Amino acid sequence: MQRDAGDGADRRRQPDECSGADLEVAVKPVGEGAGGGGYPDRRERRSRRAPAVEADESDQERHDDDSAAHAEERAEDTGDEADREQAGHSSYRMAVGSDALLGALVENPSEAAIMLDVDGTLAPIVARPELARVPDETRAELRRLVARYALVACISGRTGADARRIVGVEGPVYVGVHGLELAPEAERWRGPLREFAESVDWPVEDKGLAVVFHYRGATDEEAALEMLRGVANRATALGLQAQFGRKVLEVRPPVAADKGTAVRVLLEQRQLRRALYAGDDTTDLDAFRGLDGLDVSVRIAVASAEGPPELREAADIVVESPAELVELLRRL
Ligand SMILES: [Mg+2]
Image (cartoon, rainbow, N blue to C red; front, side, top):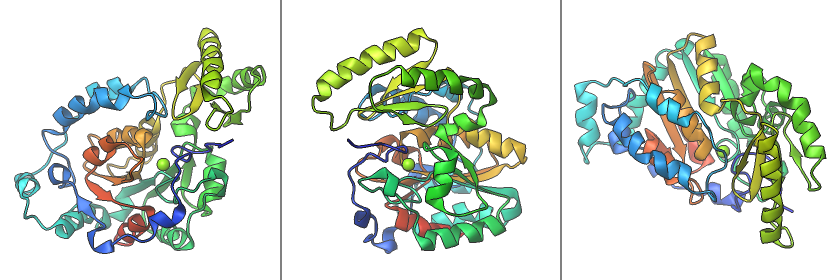
């Protein structure tokens, strides 16, 4: 049976698909998003997108019950006239655009944060998530960034400990289980979650602050899904949250935490108002929203056929693979 140890880690993409990209087109600031601070229409674009993000069970890995609140709280970003004009120009040089975006971070690294998803972003997706690994050249780049920036953080669907193992670099802050590890009120649910998992006659992935039941590859997936629907109902009756994703049922504490809340906690702890976030999947949209209202924000989508189209749409810069992301990180 396939185990999904991290967000999006169950996708059937081979690692070598991430390595042959044409780096000349690696960095593509998205037209209306290019400019660093966002634009007056960002809120409008996002509110249009919201239903699509929540609709599809097969593509939605986690439901974040405070996503709507994020949309309401979102501060208007500011962007100067020149940026707005550039954003509308189809002839605008893409490489120049990304330089301008990244420049505000590069110039003041002691005031900026670099925050990164792990699976599909730093580590190429592999068929068996437990074998995922961050390439040596990426590790070297992370070490350089740790020495240079106020904060480097890895925010993952894995546990923080597992993310640290996969990334293999000391220095970044590791936040696991989609931000739940940075939510103090989640801690008291550790015991009840374990007890609940033990009461279910089905293999479980225990992430401490969440337990995940996978049914991809089950002999009878329909029957497995039906059984897990019963499990979900029982979890809900106990006050836990149950959410179906891509061939998984995840049960977690009833705590409003996601990658966006983690991003905000990390930045507020350090009083940082400039940040970059890179990710490849649905839960990374929360992290993108966590950057709203900052002085400088750069949202990078690591695009893939399996990734959500909304991520590309919400991004300031799109790269096509983890290998292309490393090329971009070298410019920071
Ligand atoms: Mg990912």
